[in-house]
Length: 243
Image (cartoon, rainbow, N blue to C red; front, side, top):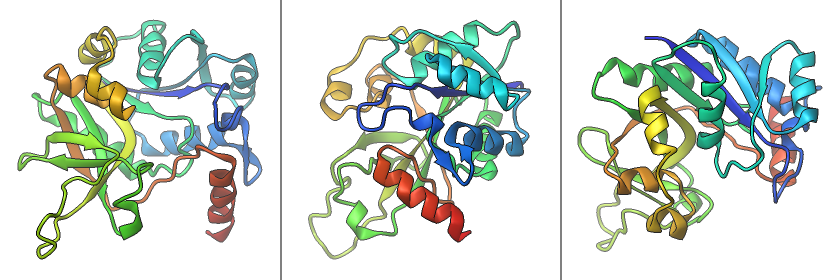
């Protein structure tokens, strides 16, 4: 099985413009993400996919492979597919590692890649049990419910499952924004039109579920922290220097 890790990184962010170049402990966030990907040793190739010359130049300067992609992409999934098409090699699996995940752990990348040892797996993602109860009702924390075979039933910003009885509290899982796909599946899902559930929740994975794709869910005990706002960056810097 031949794997590529693609790191989509765009400059224009509504809440935090230029965040891939934000400094964390003396290195840009995008470099931190890339170095964590290298440590995983699961991929034959790792490339950054961007739409901005500043990010492109910075990635080149620290010695990583980078490709320019269209600024019109609506999601990291779409950017990954364009970057994949620009490679001159064939791959079985694409791992989509967002450029704002500097604390992703190599073990998490290995875990999501291992899902594809099952030949029926076409899309995979990671979840973690929710330990902080305030996250259960936080709409910025995406929750997921899964079946007995560890396939996602639904993702939502709402509290799922709803605990009507309040006696036997269910296990709640939060979704970590790490995806992997077989290359043929990536091509298919990027051709799909936005769906009603996706637009309602602003979650692209619901488009795939609505169109009949199954998403394998692997559980991790490791925490991850995406950087979406300047406040997130402050917490990330505190976390980095506390290690």
